Image (cartoon, rainbow, N blue to C red; front, side):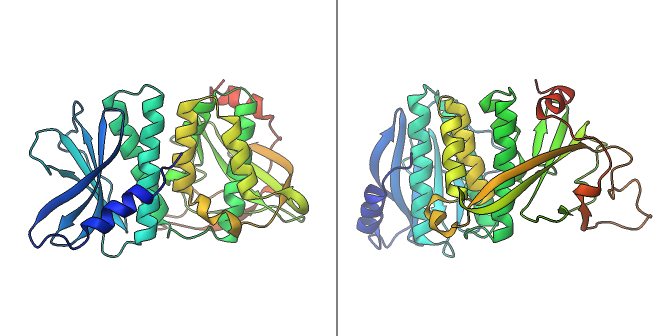
Length: 336
């Protein structure tokens, strides 16, 4: 659970404009176990920052740190104590309110990991993982999801629930959900992958294919397309309801809970936007089709030489092939 913003906001307010020199000034807030957490500002720019210390953990010098549209992460040495300090700093173009929400969420993720008994190396990875999720969120615009993206996320959560119900461990299933991380396919399960499409249309199943790579099974095999049909009804579940249901489904698995929070942020879902998603739906069926040579698709190996990319639509209802049971597909993928 994210921390309350009061301690951070008070510290940043008291430090604002308090130095005419250069470097860091900070105020300690509640630590996360062995991890010191400070709310600070860097001068002369006066930028807000979250400073986090990992006394016994090290970070490879070549590791690339997250850098979003509204923030940056950098190595810091505010006190010259020789320990690993990372500074999450708001850029001048970043929203102060959104940065505050981000800092509270990152600190809350560290708190939860401490309760799980994570060591400092693990806590460092939790910090970076959470910040990278926010990096993806801000890359996508840091706004409420578009109606199309809302439907897409509902479809992916529907398939995630089906994968867990079919027997894949919660943490493994959520970790396999890589679509929010801008992967080629939405799920990487076993040796293969699953690409998810969703529709609210009652006639046909138009699916937008975003690249020549999306339905290419030359790297991961087998490849399935999962089509989730949704029906909009007044007494159905909206997106926040489905998010709450998924959180409850994985609640007994701390790792799955952490990963789910990261994936939701990366997918563009922010709890503060929950009231924007008023539409309610019910599941109207899933069609799971294996991508075989007969499947309608464009890939690099089959398009004329010189074509570098393509975006196209297919009708999943007209795609040849049997409808697979989720458990049977997972067995073929080697996921169960």
